[in-house]
Length: 110
Image 1 (tube, rainbow, N blue to C red):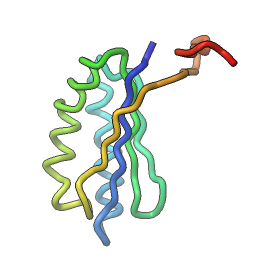
Image 2 (cartoon, helix red, strand yellow):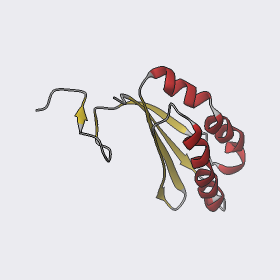
Image 3 (cartoon, rainbow, N blue to C red):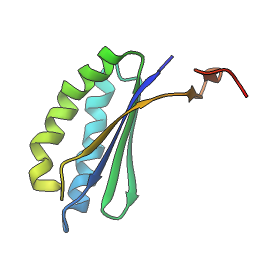
């Protein structure tokens, strides 16, 4: 089960919104090459606010992703594209439902 996740909130600099959108669209190719990142979403939350959500089977996989190509590319481009450094939260997944799999909860059902 995927119990470990990340959420990164990104705020684009004025005029850089479409560049951030393009960066995230291009990052999908990198995410598809990461065998230890089974779930990866790039999101637009508002015109200048973006997010990345991904989930992992282990803490080691999560740390590998943070140190991997997407994390490195994001941090290299952040000063040019983002109004502030990415706000990254380490999350615990409590339940998962994906296409083709049975729902699974980490805790007992209520």
